[in-house]
Image (spheres, rainbow, N blue to C red):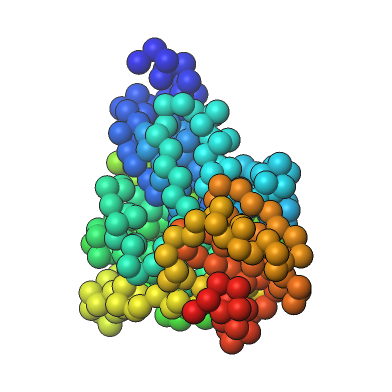
Length: 339
């Protein structure tokens, strides 16, 4: 108790949290899906605040373009092409050894979403696309787990906390997964808006975890930090025709995951469905056929003579980088990996 009082003394002096709230945080478990710009800020807040268990899920690895805004990563992480969850875990375990950190290097799909959210008190959205957000939204509302939505692009951001049985869900406000093609990879993003939106998410998470229901924000906020705009829309009641919280159909969980998926704004195609790769074996197979190659215990990254780049992950996923054409990506995949 003395160690807790010293570490969290300033936070416990904040009367809405206090000693009782701090103990609740220590007994809590949160899941952060997406360990990019939003996710790294969220994880930093959760771990430093004393949340007892933090599960981090991401499918990607650190690249130089991440360093402008993804606060837990450095140049060495990018040089080593470390999975984001691993690089984040390496940093966070030096910040708070009392928090149990779980690094899950995988893609969230309709097949594994429920399992990944199991035993979690709260899910924090660190993703960069509405397809995954709708999947998380539906999984959270089916399992009865609050979902703290956040999104940031350019100088704009949005955030809300959706609580099953209490508030509407994300689908009540955004009906289509088409975000208009505007992603950080197509129109950019400045880091201050990321920090602001993730902080809005983090404070709502803390309110929920310590049981401060009366303090929770009951609105969906949108803001533009460059043009000095702010708007709050009351959440109101769930739509009776909402396929998630109204009709309880959870459509994203009924969809089969595509084996080949073009990643919006990334100029990349992800192909899943292969059995786990033995990276040492595939290094030997690919080495004679590629221009150059980088290998670590999590992935193989190979530059191809055709100009694209092939990334093999140990869990069986493959990225074909340098194209968003599914046909070309499948052709390259078949040429180097097989059918």
